[in-house]
Length: 254
Ligand code: DGL
Image (tube, rainbow, N blue to C red; front, side, top):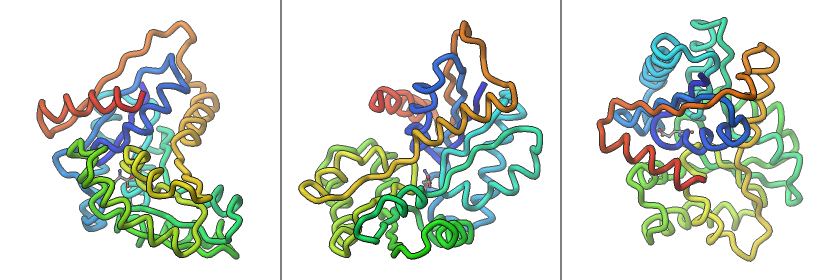
C-alpha cells in the first residue's frame, strides 16, 4: 500500500492524481482532521502530528512508500520522518517554484501557502536555489483551508476569500500562481474566476508528485503487479462524519 498523509482533506488532491497515475496501487489515506489546520501551529506541534500520522501509515498499515501530501508538514517535518524511517521512500512536497520560475514571462511568481510553510527555512532555501533572478511574492491563503474543510467550495464566501488574496498578487504582475498547499486545488474554480481574462497560469504540483511516486516505486522495486486489484482505505481520528466528507471529496476530484 502507498500511504498518503495530510493535515485534513487537502491531500486528497494528491490522492486523486496518484490513483489516476497508478491504477493498480492500493492507497491508504490518513487525514488528521482532528488537528487541522496545521498552518498556524508551531514547528514542534506540526512535527509531532506528522510523525504520528506517518507512524500510523507505516507501522499500523504497512505502507511501502509514504507521500506527505502537505506542504506545511513537509517543510517542517520531512527530515525527521526520513531519519526515523530510513528504509521507506518518503515523497514530500514544497511549492512548485522551479517550474514557475522557468515559465514566467513577467518575472513575477506568486506562491500561495500556509503561514508555517511560507516562513519555513526549507522554502527559503528552495527559493534561493531555483528562483534566482525572479521576483517571488507570496500570500497566505487566509481562510482557504477552513473553507475546504467545511465543504464550502462554490460559495460566495469562498469566492470572496480567494479574491481578497489572489487579486493583489495578480495586480503586482504575477503571471504564475503556485498552489503551495494541497487544500487549494479544491478552490481552483474560484481562483480561475478571479484570474479570468488575464494571462496567469495556475501551477498545481499534484501531477508531478504522482510521477515521482511512480519513479520511486520502480527504483525500489515496490510497484504492484499490473493485475493487482487496488483497495482504497481512509482513516481519521476526527469521527465518522469527517470520514464521510473525506470520501465525498474523492468524488469531487474525479
Ligand atoms: N494541506 C496542507 C498543506 O499543503 C496544510 C493545511 C493546513 O493544515 O494548514 O500545506
